[in-house]
Image (cartoon, rainbow, N blue to C red):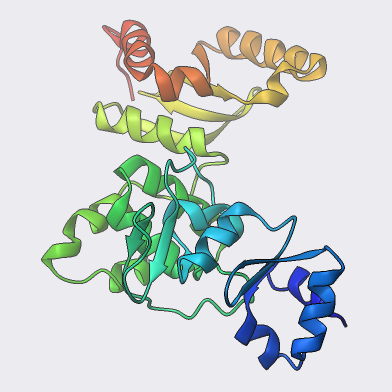
Length: 273
């Protein structure tokens, strides 16, 4: 294995000390740099030219990607990409980053990404509640954590707000947007059931107040085959006495008040459970 191959397995960027510790020599590093595949970002930091910018920022900042910046690398849902890089740093971090302190679980990988536990704890303390809930929901769905495990690691009054976010998570959503919609409906005091199987119709995303079906449409719902299936389900729902409303990502995320207004327009005067 040469230096460049080693770096590809280590996130494409590393400190010189890490490369030397792996058994390479100064000559190996010089030869790799001379090949043009490798560049020195600064004294003591080497990277492949295709290294992800997030990884470069983490190593240059002497930290690990965490919170919203670490989520994609742990396959966690993310509602919005972060405007600044979020880093877990032992010491003072770079001024352009959102710096987090404290690590509960070692990250255990060659890539400069914090552990899933640390990423979630930092998100619960840092992000708006809905965004943090989306990340936790995906982790619970994957089976990589539990709500009880996270609650135990958020003790005391200072973590009270973070623990309340965990109350928004139930692990039933199939997508980030379904988490947002569920929180929206329940916060409005609407009796909300998720992923409900209905005879002759199938499994619906939401059943509100016992009769209003809400379906959240992703990109796949624009495919001709799916459009035909959705139309058939809508007809079956109406014939079975249910009302149906369908919404997409932009509706729920960017215009939630319009969604609620339309939902209440259907629900008003016909609430049965």
